[in-house]
Length: 328
View 1 (spheres, rainbow, N blue to C red):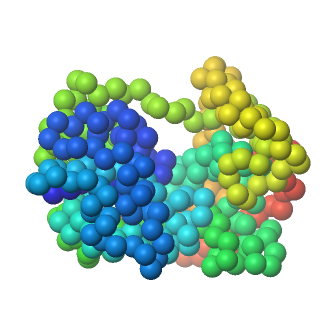
View 2 (cartoon, rainbow, N blue to C red; view 1 turned 120 degrees about the vertical axis):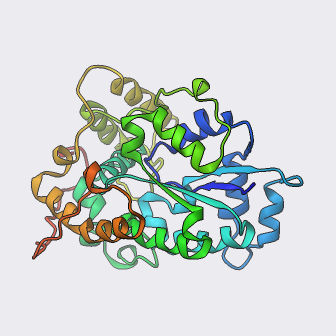
């Protein structure tokens, strides 16, 4: 049976799949993330060898493998190196595992972008939403050029382009696209359908449905941004005043604890972005989502994905907020 490769995206419960779901599968061997990274992500452009990658996975005979590494779709804070890495991984996987089945889980763009910013703050990021989403308005010189220093890019979440390339290379019947919103609505039904689609022997009663991580609520976000000024970890594009060794793991544990307390919920995209920016984000992805729905038949409209194409899209609202903690 074919190897299964789950490529992401980030912020679609991949950690849960890696810890609670795929290790439970009875008719495939789950390959640890470190091994997948060694095989596909670590080799530089001119040193990648498909045979070496396949050997690194340690497949024996007709053994069925199960890979899950969201980095294969590209790191969310740099847009998959402006898409270069995301695109390259298609061809690496095809060369090393030509008969693989590809699993892609997507999430409505306003929601996943809000989650990406929250992950940035969780990683010690200190800049505002505007600074994170529109770095080209704040950076100067080489840092402002994607080929020299890639940053967040909205292009990364135009799902139709990457999915189309995977379908072209592996065949439409071998690329399985699922909606994160369906998982959130009914995780057991979601896993049962996935198991049927991929021919997985998955004992659903043994799968924990508890979330591995919890999104930061407002107090946790503010605490993380404030004390992120005192550590350089772990995101690259941030402002820090001084570095206190060992502060970051303590800060992370503190904010995780705050998020589990009843001090408020994780901010919605509207609360995080404001109405005007949210409207711009929705308009930004409507055409991409319409193409994806037409090509795959996915029920995007049913689950609230932006689909309405406006006659005119206004310029994105960018507020030049100074680094620090004054505004989330």
